Length: 284
Image (cartoon, rainbow, N blue to C red; front, side, top):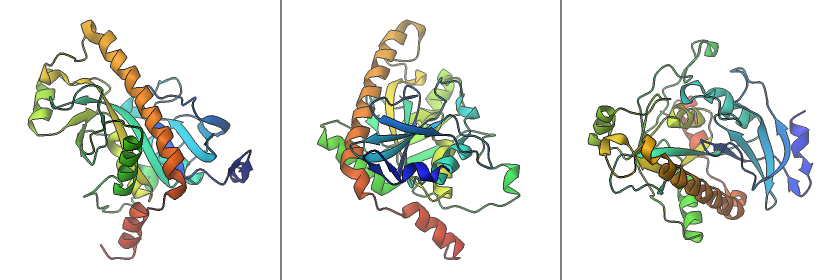
């Protein structure tokens, strides 16, 4: 039984209330001590990989690599529904998804860490709706798609370790797995959007649909190609981009460790579940 494994594991009591979904570059999180691994079968199939039940400073944490432990699942093929349902089934109430992004504004420089507060979905054919749902759907309010409480606490954790972050931004979610053309990138930038990514939709939306509070930590590796700045995805600059990428991963892990230590025991927001409750009670 999955549940019995969480009753008491070493110094850790209870189920993991926080789930971390690791993006590219975070297919593992060796700074967390792995206690056990599970891979629940959901009605949407299996999640991307094993979910590691971990411990950090006495707190139980669930960790799941979005693209699989070998980074072999493309952004448009990620089993987003299975991932989030599996996390919920093992007791997770709060989810932080890490991701790498390109900058669409000169002011958002490579190496920045940003907490998105809005997304624009430009993807298609992803598993935000499947036949297995048997026609069931809800008109889910998404005016504020990210959990404000989680974003605020992550921001406070960043301040506690003197890590500069950008506290808001709009992420344009493209289909992938290819990067934008220069023309596409210029169009994205001209709309006033801040960063571009391939995985925030439907992950953010589905978390809300399941009543899970969700926030993302996005790290900027480069300027998107349409800006034609000094650091873009280009064969001649890949070593520089990869160095920024590696530094970003270290920063994000340090931020997550600070967040776990200071805030996981205090998590109490129910904004996502409140939206669902109001909807089903006919208040919306």
